[in-house]
Amino acid sequence: MTGALASPSEHARQVHARLLKLDGHLDAPIHFMRQGWSIGERHDLSTDVAQLDFPRMEDGNLNGGFFVIYTPQGPLTPTDYDRVFADACRRSEEIDATLAAFPDRIGLALTAQDAERLHAQNRLICFKSIENSYPIGDDVTRLETFYKLGVRLAGPVHSRTNQLADSATDAPRWGGLSPLGKEWLGAMNRLGMMIDPSHASDAAFDDMLSLSRAPLLLSHSGSRSVFDTERNLDDGRLRALAQAGGVLCFTTIYLSDLHMTPERGALMRKLGLIHRLTPDEQAALARDWNALDAAEPMWTAGLDQFMAGLLHVIDVAGIDHVAFSGDFDGGGGIDGLADVTDLPVITERLIEAGLDEADLAKLWGQNILRVLRDNEAAARP
Image (cartoon, rainbow, N blue to C red):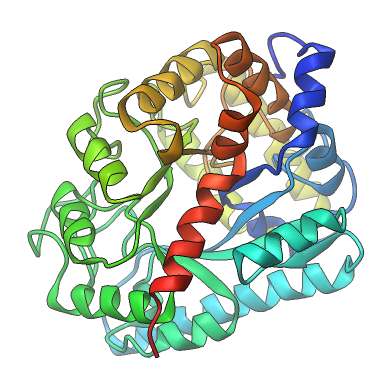
């Protein structure tokens, strides 16, 4: 991973600093329980794989976002459902422990109003989200547990089809949402939790769009017109999302082919278990990761491709229906947008493209908060 291609102007930095900026999908919780590692300290991509910490969030003026409770897909059995439910609850507890260690620097947000209050207090904002609702098993009431734990955004599926929905990157089983997945959607609406179709198949997206009584939020997705992959959303569905009041958080992933070699796959598996590694083993992982990036980058896209894609989705969906996600610490990061310190360059490019500060405020945070408010308002006992 490399740094930004150019330093933003002082004007762009000032505009960027004034905005409330949220990221739709932050995989940083994989680092929270690492031995010898603290989110409160500055880390560097030359010696560490983490793309986010508090000092770098301050450098990039990222005010917060959705910190992810991620569960890899496993067997669809009652025993595995119970195991991964416990794992997901434990990850939520790890997020809580991290927040408790830095009460003056960051706080948990449960509502859009909470986010604005924390921002006014000059504290960072932590929303919780679930990537892959596999841990609920066959019991949608488990969503109530996650809601009580503070989760306000969840997607039904990840990279493999599960009991709730077909995945965009796996063979279909249900033709969209499963019957249980439709129950999941109803429970999400009742609780006021935002529905995240990122990773879902086109048919599952269509089901979520037609059945949900509140707008959808795609936490980290791209444009199929920019790069043709099932993981991205086509322009027709992007327009339909916008017409229904939803928002797509445009991300740095899938702007190009994913170069997932066996060596990269092995390093990704180590990254997923980085909390089990000693500090020396963590440093070795960073060295191996950087050496592979230098020889065979995971993505060949850079800042120019990202900006062209972002402007395309703004043009198709409208400024009220686009937000941002770097997918940092989850596979995101490209040349020129390597970590959160590089975010001001996006604002500079958008100013150059003619967006005013009101437009930028929508894209960087207000669109997400509007969808959250709409879901809060649609909730029913």
